Length: 79
Image 1: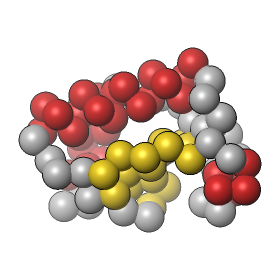
Image 2: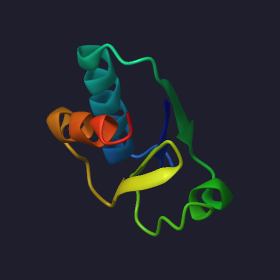
Image 3: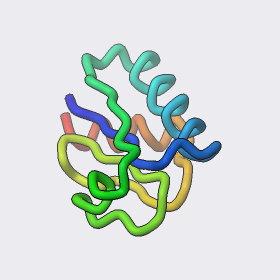
């Protein structure tokens, strides 16, 4: 599973990254988590508000920080 956190590195971006890591760890899922911080890379996903969350190439969230429980549901929908 490929998970990307999109954002320039702001506080909300860091919170989202932590929530993603917590959700993946709690689920025991094999996932590659990466950060996309450059504007061009973020725009490739048509994300206009950061942070953004992309799972297996699909934008699941933008402009907010989902809680780990919500992220788990997003991950399950891609399994």
